[in-house]
Image 1 (tube, rainbow, N blue to C red):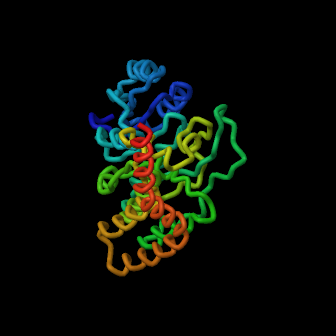
Image 2 (tube, rainbow, N blue to C red):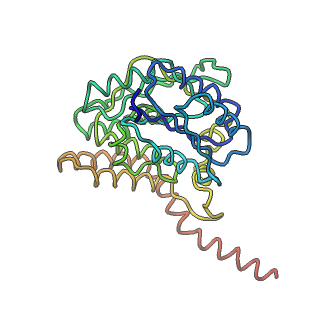
Image 3 (tube, rainbow, N blue to C red):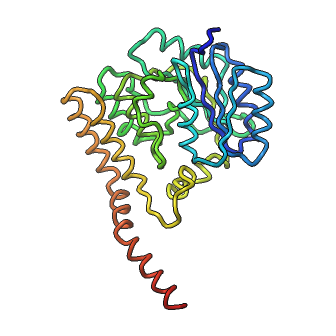
Length: 313
């Protein structure tokens, strides 16, 4: 094994003591071993720190760091990437499980195909007891392997209409230098979609046709416990002030526009991307209109509330 690992795995965690050990065991049991595992503990208040320190004491590949305060979910995801040194990078969740040959097969694809920027396997949903769930976790037939950037763009923002896009490609193996060209994860719901779109504009994806990733579906996961995007925004950004407006779909739209504008693709490719973005706009026009209406009435609402307080006093 070289002094600098070929692969960096970043695992952000907050209060994950119930399922963390199983996730760590599945990573450490990989047939591909030339990696570093960077754990960023987001000021957990449970046994997470003790678990991580115990594993780090037994395996020198583990680098454990702890934030003095909770910096937000996506900031913690970005932090483990900033600490990475490997040529390749993979995010890992504290509650998911990887098959033993997950890393090996993804690395093989990336080594053999320079045009591929992200490789990931197919996924099965599991519950807290590792039982398979009946939900079909397969995405629509993805065309993110297409050599045409606008086809990859369309596939992620439009072809996913028929089924929810779970963004599980985010947990695949990526080229670190390509990921560094993205804005990483912003502090707003849907930032994972924007990141994956940017990556797809920069290069091709490759889906391994085997089920090597097991995504855990349970009541405590953020996407389920914080289904309301306005609640999730405060999880992503703990500094968000009460009463401050958030624009989930609006931020995603701006992210897509920025991805198109800042990616070095041909003018014809950009035009096609904007045409597809027009279809996306039509799909989400009602949500965007609601966000604009809220933005218009929000100051009036708080002004009325302030007057009521002043009057009552």
